[in-house]
Image 1 (spheres, protein in one colour):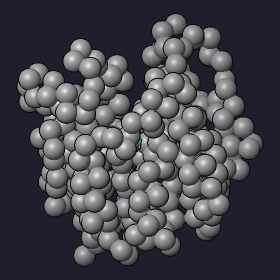
Image 2 (image 1 turned 90 degrees about the vertical axis):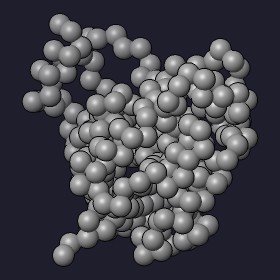
Image 3 (image 1 turned 180 degrees about the vertical axis):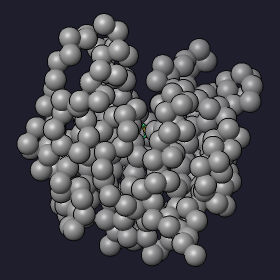
Length: 268
Ligand SMILES: C[S@@+](CC[C@H](N)C(=O)[O-])C[C@H]1O[C@@H](n2cnc3c(N)ncnc32)[C@H](O)[C@@H]1O
């Protein structure tokens, strides 16, 4: 039986108890929120592995310590990223209390958000346990922060509603149909008026510009990250508009780094 047939067969009758398949909360402190129910489900077996007999390769390079550590060692050296991050932070309203970070890595964006707004409750999710461990260390003792192990190539688990969703250099690791579906899931979990801000690694319009970007960030000439599935800005902006976001635009860009923002319409 193919992987697709098996997953279709399992789809209707999920063998995983709990709200969704494949989730487990690493740290839960979401007072009054629904993440507690995920945590309870986790302890009750949501992270249980059901062997369907299919031999899988690792989901992505990001699940290995080597890949995570290589990124963490050089993340501060990525030129211009702080400019993009500053524009992102400037577009998260001060009234936002609950913030979701998709592909949180070591929690860099959450830490930046908290400098500005110490009272926020943030949920950071990521597929990489080494990354989540780095985030746990970075955000140790922060009782308003929740870290959740989740592979975004699957539907987001039931994590409640948010005033803002942010992401930095993460969603480009998903294939294009999943990127679009995820944007739709983000739209659904935002409160009316909620902001989605995605500082993303996007595709260049030409191979020459792609090479120029890698040269500018200090990568070898012939290097390509096998986990990248880069997509142009225009397509992603178009999707966000189609999904119902307002004020959709590219708010900042430098070569292959672009900040895409959309706002869920407020209830009238
Ligand atoms: C380039 S790092 C960025 C991390 C962090 N957002 C930052 O700004 O430093 C990409 C992150 O996306 C995560 N990631 C990649 N594929 C993922 C997936 N399918 N589901 C969840 N997280 C994923 C990786 O584990 C990694 O932490």
